[in-house]
Image (cartoon, rainbow, N blue to C red; front, side):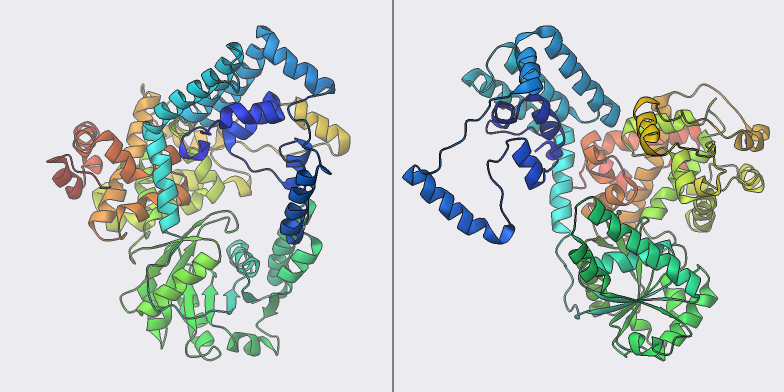
Amino acid sequence: EVQLGLLPGAGGTQRLPKLVGIQAALPMLMTGAAKKAKQAKSLKLVDMTCEVEQLESCALVCAQNIASGALKIPKRGEFKGTNGYVEKAIHEYSFARDYVFKQAKQQVMKSTSGNYPAPLQIINVLKKSIETKSLGKPKGYDLEADAFADLALTPESAGLKSLFFGSTALKKNPFKGAKPVKNIAVLGAGLMGAGIAEVSINKGFNVAMLDKFQDGLNRGLAQIKGNLDKKVKKKRATAWDTNIVASRLTGITNDMSHTPIHLGRSDLVIEAVFEDLGIKHQIIKEMETMVPKHCIIATNTSSLAVKDIAKGSSRPENVVGMHYFSPVDKMQLLEIIPHEGTSPEVVATAVQVGLKQGKMPVVVKDVAGFYVNRCLGPYIDESMTLAFEVENYLQMDKAIVEFGFPMGPMVLADEVGVDVSFHVHENLRPDLGERMGGANIAAMEAIKAAGIKGKRFGSGFISYPPEKKPSGLVGSLTSMVVPPPKKVPNPAALAAMKPFMKTGKVSDEDIQKRICARFVNEAIFCLQDGIIRNAVDGDMAAVFGVGFPPFTGGPFRYVDSVGSAKYCDHLQQLADTHGPRFKPAPLLVDMAKTNAKFHK
């Protein structure tokens, strides 16, 4: 329930603490995190465990034994040893109670910046129930019911519930005519290619991963093996399970004699090679001499037009874009990009494959940036405008994280690569015109010339000192005692930016309003121009693709909560102050006349 902006109703805040204790109950109530069976038993959340296959027979035997008296119900809510003393102190002494709940509140504020009221309400309800000695009693249930009612009416709960219903809707394929896919060929064993192969074998597809060179193939295979080994180490899977998964993967190179045999079995080819149109045309031509005629050829491009890539095919109706997000094994979003000549059956099949891979497929139009990167472009543009106005550009990151994004724009640029971020900006400028007119291009060129490339190159907007972590017990103790180093700007980046600085007083609120407005307004342009099918797709893609604050429900739900008329005025005021890049989308202007909503 907490993940829907609510608290566990029907007595959840009252019964769980009595069953497992306050210390164990608090994190479960505040996060909604599931517990493995063995953990649940050690917490006394459940009395017995058994193998999955034996569940029904064990339940029947237990029921019979309870009925006959052979099995007695264990005593619950009794806490022994240190846990017993701590539980007693929380219930009986205000100083112990205040300390525990203060720590819980600080943890919530640190991880959510106070944007999620439900965990804070859970803390309040539990503390009041203990203070008034009403835990598990009628008054405690009344406290819970009142808090539940309050939370149910919050905009945060509305946003999170819309995410739940939206993501549920996207688990169904709205397109008819999907063809069966059993065998997939992935071209390129880099980070993206190996990631695509991994999520595919995890879900039962047979995958042939092709790389031009053996070294590249080995790197990709090692990435997949490493991730499978981590599952075993963390006890999320057995070695038997991961061996079965790994058996679905075959690594091949161009010069292997059996490569044409594997490609000849493919129902779907996904290319994840270098972003060069000539290379992609060459690969398509080569593939079409080896794959069956029904085989779909999907491109994982993020910057090239799918229609241009399809020009290299003799069967363009079988070409479609499948844009995965990095890291592929963690990011849920998948953009499906048909060009004008893509057949409906190919679109339906691509969506079906994405669903089976555990992705959230959103079909978008074949335009520059597709949907997510198209919205991200103006976001980057405003970030690179503000970076030269604030005293410390890390102020931007702090403000944006407090607004609800998982990371700020400077850290984001470093993570994905400063060169990649700037390429997105450059790619969108011809298409979006004045909507990309904030940043100083000369300043961005100076940053590139200074070698500011991002975290993995060791030189981004943030300083990345060489990591020398002690190993073994010393390393473990050090990580527990010594806090991680504070982020500081990279002096090389500051030096490159200095000639272009125009610093002034910019508040955190101004930063949040300006950067968020650019993203939201572009999302509305995308809906207006038919780049996304509907507002639900736009909300889901923004949240699951770039981490638009989940508690808002996405950019369209966010505008609904503010009011289209009020948000249109807000954009117009920003345009009057900062220029035409903030000019509201015509669709929003029309909606503002009647204060209409995107979600009915």
